[in-house]
Amino acid sequence: MTRMEKLAALCASGALERADVEALLRWQISLPAEQADCALAADCALTLLSEEDKEELKARENALHDALMTQIRGKTMKKKRMARYMAAAALLLALCTAGAAAYGVTHGVLNFALQSGEPAAALGGAEALVTAGTLATAKFDHCAVEVREAAFDGGELRVMYAITPLEGDVQEDGGSYVVPGAEQDGVHMCDYILVNGQTAYIDEMSEVLGDDGAVLYYLQTNLGEWGVDVSGAQALMIGLPLLPRESADSRVQPTLDFTISANVPQGTARSASLVAAEAQGQSILLESAAFSPIRGEVTLLVEGVDARTLEKTLDDFPYAEDALERELPGTRYAGRFEDADGGARFTVVFDPPEDGWPETATLILLRREGPPDWAIELALEK
Image (cartoon, rainbow, N blue to C red; front, side, top):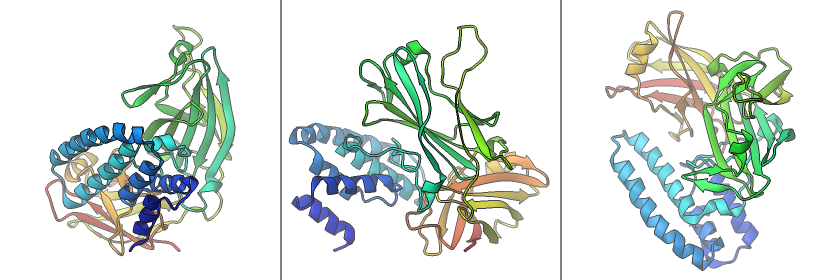
C-alpha cells in the first residue's frame, strides 16, 4: 500500500482528527495539479462535508464531469499535453465536487489556490522573499481595501490584497465575486502595476472568497517581460491603480501605494548553463537563467530567425523534464517572442517541483508541424 493509499484509508476510517483531515486537504490543494492525489483530496473533503452537502455536490459532480470530458475530447493534443490537461481537469473535478474552498484554505502569495486548480508554488526559503502585514489601506463609504502580502525574487512580483464590504455580504457572479458597494465607491480591479514609476502588466490574476468575508485578489507579473528595470534599486515603490478617480472627468488614476525591499537574499536563486540544444540546425543561446524558490525562468535567443517566423514554428505549450522524465510543473512561455540582435528572443518560466529544482532539465519546444521537436538541455548550478 502506497503512502497516499494509507492516508486515504485513514481518512475514510475516521481515525484522523478533523484538523488532520483539513491539513491533508490543504496540502493536496497546494500541490501543482499533476502532483496532487485527486482521490485523496476528494476523500478528505467529503469527510468534512455534512450529508446534506454531499447530496447537493453529487449532482454538481456529474454535470462537471460531463463538461470536462466534452472539453477534453474536443481538443487535439499531443500525448504530453493531454496528460497535463487530464491531471488539471481531474484535480478541478475533485476540488469542485468536494467544495474544498469551504475549508479555510490559507491564501497568500506563496500558496494562492487558483480557481484553475493550479496554485502558485513555493519551495523552502521562499518565506524570505515575502513582505506580509498591513502594507497599505484605504477605506471608503461601502468597502475597505488592504494590501496584505507581496513577494519579489528579483524578477517576479506577486501581490495579494483584499476588498472587504462594510455592509452586506459578497455575492458570487459566474465564478467571480461582487463586493457590495465597491462599484459605488469606485474601487475596481487593476490590470497593471506601477513599479518605481514603470508599468508592468499582469501575467496572472485570480480571486477567491476569504475566510473573513473579504474577496482576496492575487496578482503576478514578471517585471523583465514588460521592460521594467529595477536593477540597483534598494526598494520597490509599488502602486495599484484600483482606487476611484477624484472626478468623473479626471485623467489621473489614483493608486494605492506601498514599498517593499528590492533586495533578494544572497543565494536565493540558482543560475544555469546551456548543455546542448537540438533544434534542427538552429543555433540557440542562453541569455539568462534564474531558479528561485517561487519561479524558474530562462531567456533564450534563436539566431538567424525573426520573432514572427519563430512564433509560427513553435506550438503554444512547451514542457520540461528532469533526468528521470518527471515534468517540471507550470512550464509556459512568458510574454511574446520578440526580435533581437541576430535573432529572436523568448522566455520560458516554470513553477518549482515539490522536491526542489533538479540538477538538470530538458526543455521541449513543440513544433506546430510535428516532430522533431526542439530539446534544450540545461544544467542548474549547485
